[in-house]
Length: 222
Length: 222
Image (cartoon, rainbow over all chains, first blue to last red; front, side, top):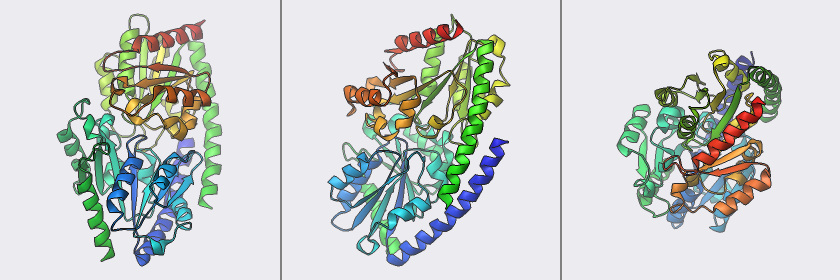
């Protein structure tokens, strides 16, 4: 009984959420602000990738960050140290960001002064995949120590993303991780996804990822 | 508005869930079956730890496993290969196991033929922490590549667990991970938690963890 009730409610929430997400997307389009929703497991490297990315883009773009966190502000503090405007959303337990929460963050940002907003979603491969945030594109990180079987276990996340960043490739020698098998599994779920192999620690592969994002923003602004 | 509705519903579900969990716990107590709920991020090493643990216990205990997975059966297949009876719960999207789901799995198990059941919960540091499964004890894995800041970001998980297994200590030389800082952060949230440093790959530290579980089961059966 409990289960059935849960499902009904979820559909309600998802329908409302989709409406708000669509409104956000329209508004961002009219203001020419590109928004990227970045998702990953806890510890996959979201904050590190955001910092590396915005360091690479700071000459050519004005960027802001929306930081989702259940309880702390550590990530927002790291981002703010880089001089990047950041809004912290403390969800107080919620396991994902939805469009209503993103809308609350956007009210705190000067959209006329930005070209790009990156959302750092809650560390979770499950729930964030279900909620449209109003972003133009979705990206996810899979870090090598998590294993190459993750597309089998969290298929929705790999399906809804436009780009997959395989992070921590400096661990490849230590981990039992088959990149070829991973790619086959991912492309079977989502043939259009772009895959980047990077290490935020060594910087390897970061330029190709940044170039993809740069192209997407340029394309959006056309 | 959407947010408020979400919270009300959750409290309903949690109240119902707690009732079912308590019933499960009573029944398992009368049948003298100890149940452990094991939680972790995706790729933290839940299946590996379960396999290592049950290899170590198989001479002295009859064990079964409840495998939670969103979509695949890969973990259940790994466990079954070891000759361990496993029940697979495919949640079809749900990001945690609750007591109602565990109850469904228990109906498929012969409780008179078991001393120990380990639940492998969904890979997620957020939602599983909120739902009582009916287990006697909760344990979690944090793997070294995830980072030592996770207690700051997912405090509830560290608070509800009786034991923390820090897995993949063979990565310590490569990762920016301070074990002393981690322990301080964890103990501040939960002074009673037992912490084990292990590597499922090398086997280091596994015996101490198994001994803890053996003692807990013996204590429960008294």
